Image (cartoon, rainbow, N blue to C red; front, top):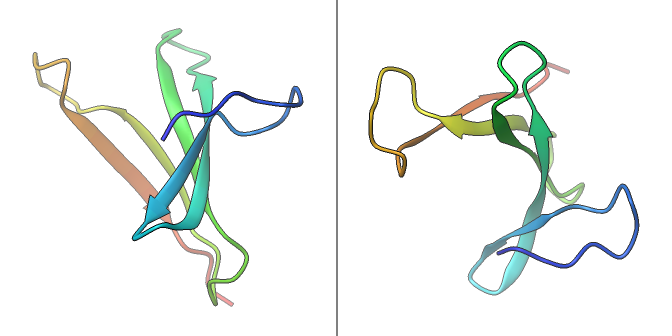
Length: 75
């Protein structure tokens, strides 16, 4: 869900699941292409942090198609 940022580094989106906030997203720009994407992270309450990016799906003409690329650091 989009939000109005209260500070310059505040997230642009809150990620909600069943009424609970489970993460946040920030609009970023690809340095090579200039395309926008959303950088995602989960809440600290989860046992292991997830980092992800949401952007246009590769090889698709559909502007509504997105892909999530994520990783979870191994501890």
